[in-house]
Image (cartoon, rainbow, N blue to C red; front, side, top):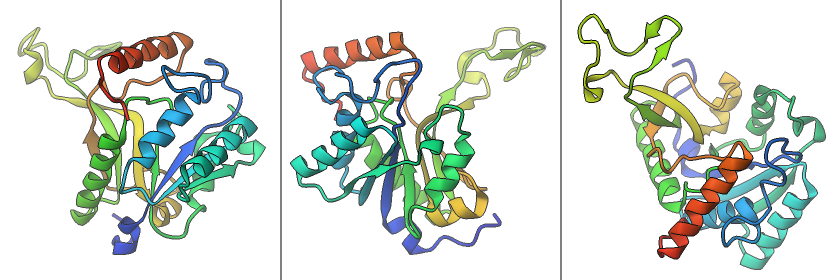
Length: 247
């Protein structure tokens, strides 16, 4: 890789960045409206998950939404957790039309050293257990020479494009066993880990030699649409009823 060799300072400190812009067009008020037993919604849930993750040193909620910023600040005060920071985001970086690359460039400047871990409130089932696993996996990956880590979902099923199968050869066997199909990996946006320094060098939240880390499909369920909000809330409430923590 062209980026310089990672130093201990790159992996020692973990700073979580949680983007939560205003004006969701597909799911109204998705960040802070009630979700299952969480009055503060997905934002409250994610903050509780992250504050239970011992490996996390700093938590930045980046938003241009006064409701999100106010809630974050009150949560930090109520919990007495100085790791949490409500960071106002410039309005030009909070529009739906703003390219992700522009926001990534902005995030890369937030801290000189340490590792950035970007995650989203819209993945309600990525809890503290998985964040701890991700940090541990990242440090192992860095020791092995990787410059970043991203969460993925393994797809070992029958995938086609307009020309037919893309991950198996039907001339060998028209319908092979799924376990014999070459797996592909979907970027699920559950988490990205990369040193701030490397972000600035490559201009991205993924480096030149990334490590893919698989998370279970049922863990990375996310919310993009209103019916998904309802479905995942139903799942969360069912888990709570059964005494299964999602923190």
